[in-house]
Image (cartoon, rainbow, N blue to C red; front, side, top):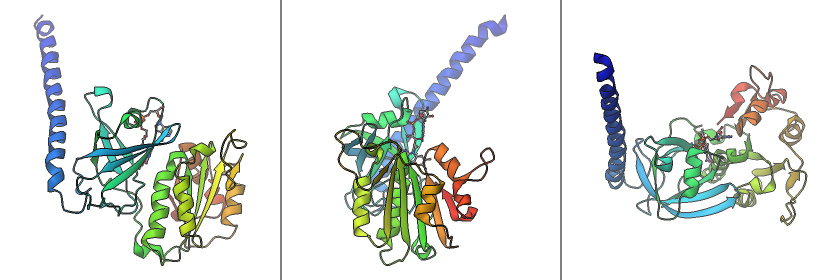
Amino acid sequence: MFSSIRLPHIYIASFTIAGCGVYSFRRHLIEEALAETPEQEPHVMFRGFRPTSLRVQNVESLSHNTKRLRFEYPDQTWTSGLQLTSSVLVFCWPQRSWFPAIRPYTPVSSLNQRGFLDLVVKKYPHGKVSSHLHTLQPGDSLYFLGPLPGGYRWSAATANEHSRVYLIAGGSGITPTYQLARGILEDNPNANTKVQVVFGANTAQDLVLKKELDILQQRFADRLQMRYLVSEAGPSTGEADNKDVSYGARVNTSRLRQFFGARREGDEKVFVCGPPGMEKALVGGRTCGRGILEELGFQKDQVHVF
Ligand SMILES: Cc1cc2nc3c(=O)[nH]c(=O)nc-3n(C[C@H](O)[C@H](O)[C@H](O)COP(=O)(O)OP(=O)(O)OC[C@H]3O[C@@H](n4cnc5c(N)ncnc54)[C@H](O)[C@@H]3O)c2cc1C
């Protein structure tokens, strides 16, 4: 009797306290973000993993499900302060939910770029954060936390440790791949590291950032080689001629042997970022045995999965 009367009150009180807690946390994050931004170290946007609010400057549609979003820094002279390779956390309250949804995204603008940061975001069906990001318009704001710990540290010292770097990307896995390829080439223009990017996608329209990758290839023709593999059988009607794209082609053992050659050197390094099925096929696992990269003669410590 006692508990049957008291219990609803306990629930109501608990929900009220929890609700107030979530609300206060949310207000705290927002207020801290607004208060911290102008006081941060000069010249650097992401520092100390503090929440930061950035305004959308521009939105560009890259394909039926992918957009590039440009976020402006409060000061046009600031850079990201991120190291190669880095991601940032984005947090938002999709459809006015109480709890924030938090996901990592990889900037595709140069990490030394002043004044803004670009994200390329693929929208997943019912995806909480990607759907929210696809609703953003110029003038809207988004909360960031960064830098995200982890990533692969590539520095000037690393640059000459590797004679060849192979980057294998699938779908939206191109974002860290592009960041790394660009960083290797632009940050160390005098290094000798040769870079080969294998980019697999379902259709030619899914080869987002192809324009940027092609420009990079032209600028660093002696160091960068691009390979585009598309699983659809041929170009769609009305599609521009993509001579450098292989159709009806997948990332598999024979393709990679053809691209990377049969002989392995100890100073080669492979980076992989793609859908789980592709990563599993490349690096193997308990359920699927040896991966393609092992078959090609790469040692485990030569392979990094983003
Ligand atoms: C370090 C890191 C960097 C990343 N950088 C980028 C980036 O630059 N651009 C980008 O678009 N994404 C990037 N991602 C993926 C991103 O963090 C989110 O996972 C993605 O946007 C989906 O989040 P969501 O909230 O929209 O989907 P959720 O609400 O989490 O999931 C909705 C549905 O989508 C499916 N789904 C979610 N993610 C994937 C996926 N990766 N592949 C296949 N199905 C999926 C889920 O199974 C589910 O059915 C990165 C991930 C990591 C770990």
